[in-house]
Image 1 (cartoon, rainbow, N blue to C red):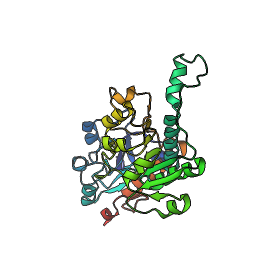
Image 2 (image 1 turned 90 degrees about the horizontal axis):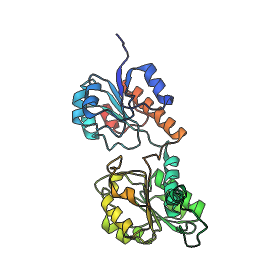
Image 3 (image 1 turned 135 degrees about the vertical axis):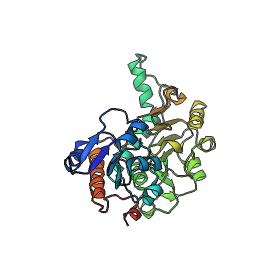
Image 4 (image 1 turned 90 degrees about the vertical axis):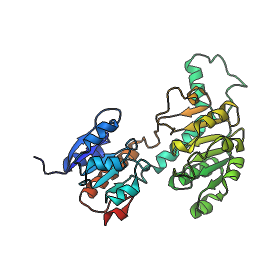
Amino acid sequence: MSTKPRVFVTRRIPEFGLKRVLEATDAEVWDEPLPPSRDVLLKKIAGCEGVLSLLTERVDAEFFDAAGPQLKVVSNYAVGFNNVDVPEATRRKVRIGNTPGVLTEATADLAFALLISAARRIVETVKYVQEKHWKTWEPLGHIGQDLCGKTIGIVGMGRIGYAMARKCHFGWDMRVLYHDTRQVEPADRDLQAQRVDIDTLLAESDFVSVHADLNPSTKGLFNRDAFRKMKRTAVFINTARGPHVIQKDLYDALKAGEIFAAGLDVTDPEPIAVDDPLLTLPNCVIVPHIASATVSSRNGMAEIAADNLLLGLKREPLRAWVNPESGN
């Protein structure tokens, strides 16, 4: 019988981190392409001392009850942890880890890729060529929005928001506006950014890029009223969390031409429903939550997730510890 601690890994992650987990623990890895169902998950974690989870797993009181009192750590393979009931975990002295920092540039790159794809109608015109509609150069065809010298509005000037703003400011000479709960001195100093209220940002920005945490004040922030305050030439980008956006309102705004285009890496629900009307719009670019999908980012996430899991099993401080107060 193995003396190594039992853990459950809810999806196969890069070998860069998984190999260490397999060597140090008695680990079961869920190898299916889709996440385990709720019933299966609760059975698999029973008796485990550690769980390496993804955002797809709801880590709540029912989860902790199913695992049992020996559970020491849940290592979330993600920067976010909206799937975790952190107060409940803390009450039960279960350490919660996440994987911040290593995907900042990759996520900002993806946000800009969506921005330029939506602004310049890249996906729409690729389909145009593939469907054999391209007959000649069209002087009035496929006209998009300019980027140089425009205004980027950043909602949430954290690490990723700052990286996005830096790329836009230095790469395309954009003016930077941002909306945040605090003044961000490096953005003010290095990017000549201006902190403004949300209405000013919406009214003056040519591009609006969301990088905010999901909380009661930001959930549903981008609704019908918000889109109507934006320029008709504006491009909306969301690489943060799907519930920031009321998708029906975004559809209506795009369909009516109230804004020019949108690019989404996240949706609500996720994956997006196959019959969601946003999928019918040529001016909405949607990709399947790939912001961190680079070799270095995913390996970095795997390394931190493995570190968090193994440290938590030893009751040591986690490398990225969401609830350090749980370690008493």
